[in-house]
Amino acid sequence: MYYMKSVIKVFLFVLVLSGVSCSDTVKDTVTYTANVPVYMSKDEFKATTRVGATHPMTNPGKICLYGNYIFINEINEGIHVIDNTDPSSPRNVAFIEIMGNIDLAAKDGILYADNMVDLLLFDISNPGAPRLKSRMEGVFEGVLPATNNDYPVAEKIDFEGKVVVGWTQETVTEDVRFYYPRYYYGISDGANTWSMSSGAGSVAQPGAKITGVNGSMSRFTIAGEYLYTIHIENFYYAQPTSSFYASPAGLMKVFNIENEQINLVNSINVSNTVETIFAYKDHLFLGLSNGMNIYSIENPSAPNYISATWHFWGCDPVVVSDDYAYLTVRSTNVCGQNGNMLQVIDIIDITQPKVVSQYTMTEPYGLGIDDNKLFVCDNGLKVFDATVPSMVGSRQLFSTTDFVGFDLIPSNGLLLVIGGDGLYQYSYSDNQLNRLSVIPVSK
Image (cartoon, helix red, strand yellow):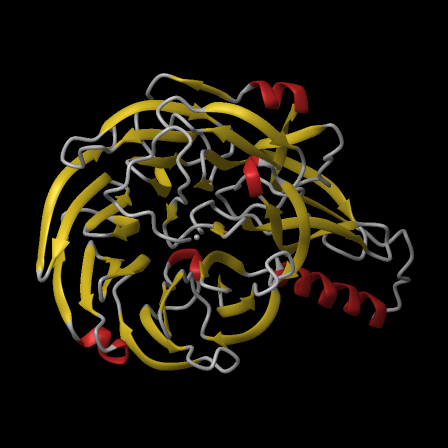
């Protein structure tokens, strides 16, 4: 994109020096491959959400542990409901069809899930039989599905009365006047993604008061009576030539969810590189493509920016325990440069976080910490002794390459790992890691 703009600017500059007038008659004709939006009316879109029978797990994403149940996102399709009363024999009991679903969170009998631009609430007082309770329309305005390619978007998106549910690729020929008329969007591939532990042994009974545990890649988190979400919104600004370009903006939405009700109480501008969010005590930790931002939630309805740390460009979830934050940086593929690492950040003084150590990793994804053990999805799974946080990367306890891990949740001796191979469950204690079960993906 920037290369093409530079070439055209140079071309026009040469024309000016040559005495060619920069009037409306100066133009060039270009042909290129572009993404063209596929629309669905809002009524059709809402009708696609339903709860039904089990569905094969083929492309799992985010994960939430809710008592004796596990909710697993099937990327862009919905949520698997797993009865995990016996972790050695989990049962897939239902599937919630939700177009464009990526994120989820659960608390006190309510499951929260994104449905492209909408937020859905499901009654899970009986977790094995979810029921759609309500829909908040347009709270994630400007969210678009991934294009999964590097082609530009051919036209300005029309959000009025419709939802973009996909893309087609077409050859476009048009006249160019002074600029390269393309629409570029901050479109996530849906893989980026981030409460208090309920305990693996607790049972989610009807009416139970319990907060689900999310993985580190989540963009939803719950703290107290508030749900915090992050997303990238695409908006437009006009060029002097009346052309429109899309520009991504990072937003944090704050919802009061007390007493099974929900109200949007705040919307806060955050970095447009935001990827993940993690709540710990009275702070929110936002993982960015180039660092970590910390917000205070002493006033839970109005998060207040406190401080930040920075690093080279990469994909980076974060988790926190006591006075330290642990952050992985993955810089392969679309994420950035060629460095992959685990960072340990001292947050004793929350206003001045500082990196105290960092360790080379292979290609790290999600991570979690429990019982002084740090679990990292990196070339499988690696487990470190976090008794001395600053030395965690040099004290590896055990590892396995049995699977490709995307994210994980360790909770009271039970470890859930989700990835391209499916859901793996382990028990852990001391220096032992014992596999309990596997729900494999369907090939």
